[in-house]
Amino acid sequence: MPPQGLTPREGSTPSSGIQFFAAPASAAGPDGREVACAGDLRSMARVLRDVPADWPFSDVHRRIWLATASGTPVLDRTAAATLGALPYPRHYLDFETVAFAVPLWAGTRPWEALPFQWSLHSEPVPGELEHREFLDTSGEAPMRPCAETLLRAAGATGPIFTYSGYERTTLAALAARFPDLAPGLDALAARLVDLLPITRAAYYHRDMKGSWSIKDVLPTVAPDLDYGQLGEVQDGALAQLAYSEAIQPDTDPERCDELAAALLAYCGQDTLALVRLAHFLSDG
Image 1 (tube, rainbow, N blue to C red):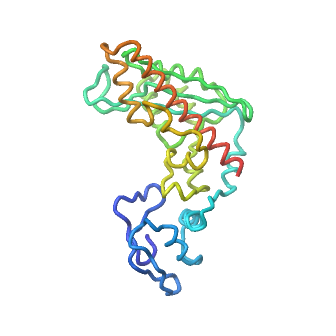
Image 2 (cartoon, rainbow, N blue to C red):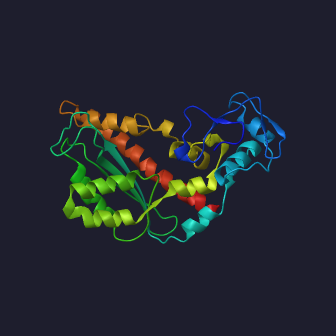
């Protein structure tokens, strides 16, 4: 429920753990005191400075209040404790998938998310990184080689960090598609550690503006990893477009190489971002 006098703002996302609120001219605090509010969220920091410290915040909202009103990021040490309990080697995984309105390959459905690429950074000991990757632009169904190469690359031990539940969903779909690979894929899924809830429970920077998307968190943690500098593929939607063009029979080989390089750079940055985020949280 929003604080008294505030109503959820259109387009807010309760599932993310935070709602933005459309504020009236004023609202009553927990002791009946009137708190000045702006008519919109453009003056969020000023508005939050007017909210009294004894407002009945949730833990997440209190971090947002502290970070936004003070201008100082908030990082709880619980994240370092959680990550510190996990062993090495550590791995950092990201998939790229494509979904076609009209299926290209037998046994697939319209708009089914099909993995064609993965990136895996591995950390055998603290600070030592290895990188492996897979990308199939042959135009043949990429799902089985995608699964088989990942099983070889990820080994049998160590946590596998992701951001959100998407990699778990993708592994489950691959296991359902290829029953002979299911034991190995299920074993990988059992090793997944999602950094999203760990980050949400411990960290907030006001430049995130209420979002824990990795694209909003990363600039506050590792600003040198700028997706805007990647070139042609800077997000998942552009990755799908690049892949779709690369597998067309009439795509020039030189152009296909350019697209593949852009896809590899993008997916590789996604897993390097996970490395940098895990290190940041651990140092807190």
